[in-house]
Length: 388
Ligand code: NIG
Ligand code: FE
Image (cartoon, rainbow, N blue to C red):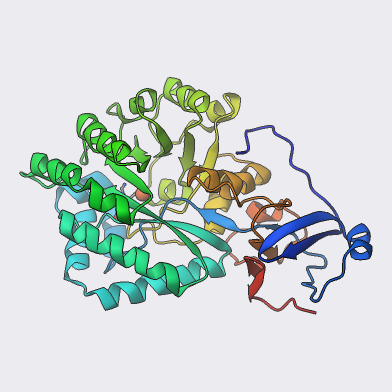
């Protein structure tokens, strides 16, 4: 079940978790549990906050190159849209990515996943999107799949229709639609960047309908730069998540809440776009929309830390620390179709973070430090010194 605003969250002091074969089998006050079970190993989390592992539901993790010079352009008043119009932004990253060989991409991919894990992310979504031609997109999807076996983090793969080809946009949409059976074998979700400077509402609809018919889950980048009607598709399509939502009208957020479409907030990108626009978190709260948080790691938003995303969700968007935690765990897992993780309850995966802080409020109160003390993935301690 996802978490809706105002739902209760049970906090247990001096708690214990019983883990068996990678799953949580019991949880409760440690004094009670310790007498009931025999155990061969104790993970000691004394004086520390313990939560479910973080789930990052939105990253553009696999690309070559970087675009640090665009920061200076932005500081001089050139907008993200203008950079894109001039052939910079995503288009530049596509050029660099297409030139990079598989080995190089796997290497950067792995190093970024390792970093994500060190910040407490135990499950991560990774999108393609910097290939442009369908063959290159399929290469990226294959490489993302290759990364799965090389690291403990669980990876959910998404095909992203990122930017349409200048003159050949109709042909590109057709290529995508015609390739859905191949994409389906390599990805769980399809996503479209629907916005001014990207795909139109109609193009997005055509792509997402084809994806749906092929059995893929649907996500969308919508209303990030401006509102051209993208989030209206919440009424028509079986979307799982709509992300960004900086310009989304109130009515569409209410539709998402009723239809159970996750509203995914990307607070680090609110910062990197240098915009005054904000998603309508109050409407999400009053309509009890399922709300998630992601990093949106990309060359435009160079942070793979879900901790930073949570911190900024409080300070920029007004989420409380508990709302941020639910958005970054159980709801982000839900938005990826994963019902087996995100809370510490019997029957759930033992993906656990032990934090260097005494209570959950510190998760968004303190800024910039890596607050992870230890990480347990499927019951196995993979970082941190907490075995006794
Ligand atoms: O979610 N909006 C589209 N894609 C990314 C940015 C990608 C890029 O700038 O390279 C985003 O913000
Ligand atoms: Fe994105």
